[in-house]
Image (cartoon, rainbow, N blue to C red; front, side, top):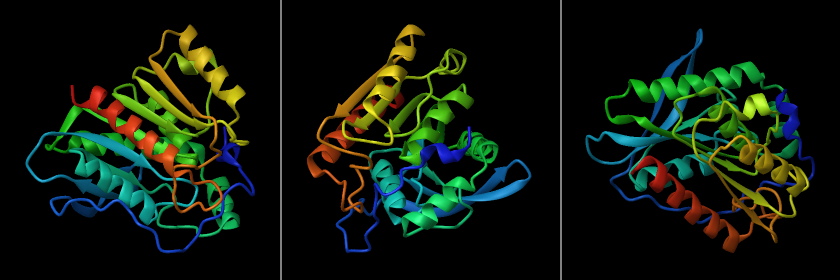
Length: 255
């Protein structure tokens, strides 16, 4: 499949208005890191808690906008909870602020390159002495939600996967590759990832005996977790989704 499967034209508008982000504690540290993805050297935004660890870790995957400040702040949220969080950069430094540019960047992202980047991110985290190598999960939103699922499909050692309104699969052979628990969070009014697709994914996972928890927020549409999306943000549902996400990772990466 090509990344164009994520097209959600007209559903989202990114605002540049000032926003109140989660403020991580002063003990959270951040840095840009570099590592190999195939023959390329790629960059990522790393957020990590104070201490020597080892800590559980999370691969954080951006929306179609790219590795922007919202995604970096989310990585800090996880570091504040005791995880090493690696926010990957699928667009090689490019960030969109309008839907047309975001659409072009997403369509231009080769699927094999993105898969290789996911595997490289996992390998980089495994290479770190401060990471618990058997406690690495993934999370993404929108386009990144679909790639979080791709991480579960292409990284057999992944320990947990959170999909926030991302592209799904139902093919039995692909579903069979999932080895970790999955949490899926979706909007009941999402026209890009409709409920019927979510139910089909759920049925396929159930048939295959996979561990899947699904939460559909009936009053929300696509990208309702992102407070930068003026047309779709739902504060109450976003708060609930974050609570479920933290509880899911706590259960699967810390116990």
